[in-house]
Length: 270
DNA sequence: GCGCTTGTTAAAGT
DNA sequence: AACTTTAACAAGCG
Image 1 (tube, helix red, strand yellow):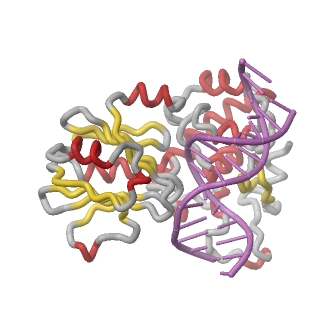
Image 2: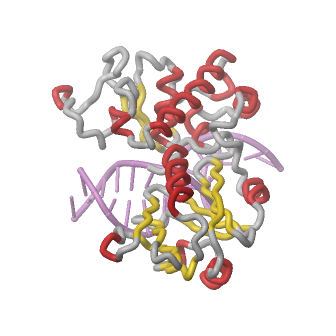
């Protein structure tokens, strides 16, 4: 799922493939995927070039020669693919940027939760969208300041992009597991030490995830992520349930803030 | 073939 | 009024 590490991986991919080629046109299968009108986008990009990128949380900004900025949000299932031959066109390539080199950059979005837009001013956009500093940039003090005034559970607070930007459902579980904090602990009741642990855990989990290019299968085996159901590694002797990689207690699944949440009841006491 | 999943946001609730 | 919680959204996949 496109959380911060995936979007960072996409950003590097786009930088490595799609800069400094003149855009001839953009195909958009469904205009609902755009946050600007199709005409505006087409007009701004035709003859233009991508010149760089910036990422804040899960938001990818693509800079262009004219100064216009393309915004990309990958929703839950978005991805990018660079290709030349039509036979290599991936499924659900609903938006395609065509370059004069014959290559194309596809914005893949199976579930249409993804969005592409056009803005002039990145900082203004971030302010308007209330997007907090990127999770890799946020300091312990930043975290403390926000946590002090939140009396919701830590999990939804960490998921809130105006707290810290880039954490999604899976990574929040991983971070809380690493910091040994129960997902339903009330944010403003965390101790200084616990916030320090959270901060360190965020940095550690994100750094590892980016190193492994967000391929969850390649994460260290003591990460909680392997407990999730997509993992088809053979643990079936535990009856479909998985054990804590640290203490072998059975991992619990609960719904916190309406999202599926996995945690170790032993390592993460309430 | 039904139910679950994901991130974001609008709406409802406190 | 301001903060928190819940549900809806689209659609593929198990």
